Length: 115
Length: 115
View 1 (cartoon, rainbow over the protein chains, first blue to last red):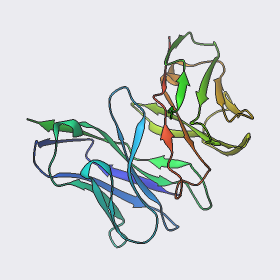
View 2: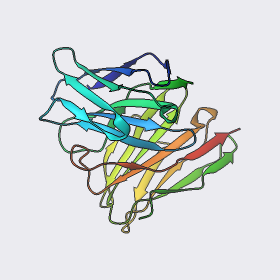
View 3: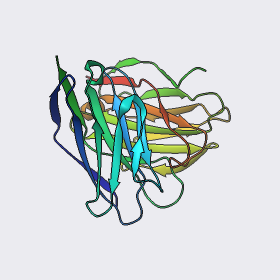
């Protein structure tokens, strides 16, 4: 079975500070990993994904994540937080072998950005 | 290009009733997935459809059912509603059922309240 664990349900940073949202995964097969963002009263939007190849993945809005197999981690970072980054962030992993759209989500991290 | 459309956006039902939610994918997309989002359980996978066939089903009781039509539009039905079915139901569409290649685009969701 596959799962993801997001450490910290709430994270608060100051505008301009580093954003670090943590995600650890468990998978018996090579995982495909995703970060999604959800703004209030909206659906989810894909920030970035890791499938194979380069372990440092760059996404939209200045976010990036690094796949570390040895640490089973896929943490999301952004060098400088902006007020518009305030949202809920979800880490996800594909649900099993074979081609699928089934995603297993973490419990989410609510990011607050203080002026 | 229009995004994923979900109707209705808000719905209030009484325990014991049934409800049907609709999802219209992005034009050309043939894969549709459904998720339930609640504060307690987070985001949980419900169904995945491709070309009118259910490819995956999440761990939900038989009261939850779905289907996909030849135009790729999808519906999900919940019978004998319970208070615990109150949730945001999200639909996602993609070109094909392989999240490693094709981005899933999420709709804004249907907010179901069961009283």
